[in-house]
Length: 222
Image 1 (cartoon, rainbow, N blue to C red):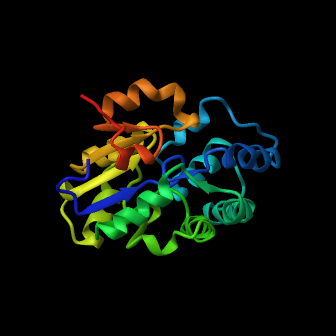
Image 2: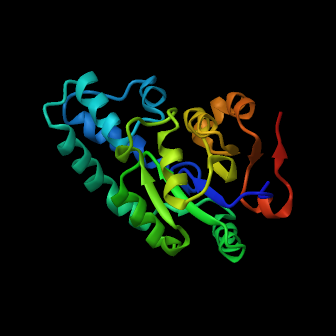
């Protein structure tokens, strides 16, 4: 999987970190303040959106009086302690990151989350120094499935798209990386279990744990 690769890029939530569970409670609490409850289709509707795009979606769909920046600030406040204390790496991720450092393969985060929350969970899991760049969707023109975030991360690292391997957990993220001309390894996550067939159709590889990357237990798809 790593043959010919000079860079490995990671989505954060559901891919590198077991963190998708955080947002269900936050959405319930936040929308409840305005007399709304999250609808069943909401999570799928916002998949791949940047933090800013998601805030804009909430504001328009639920008629939130707060500004987009106020919404984002409140989400950061509600989620910060959880990301700093309770969000953990996916199984095998720590050892895999150390091996990438040993091999001198550069690494980056390419996430739709906020920079504050990304840094909080990387620091608490003692992997903040394992990444050569952090790119967030709010800093590029369009969120996933547009390729912008992955092309930006590759440019920052000084590598070409074909030299990158991407780890992702949802279809919109996989499409973003594929649209950037990169190979993708899908990471199993309970949150996206209902999309597993689509994920497997889109990705080049599939793992249940990062231990499978180094141990050779990963699936090659297609």
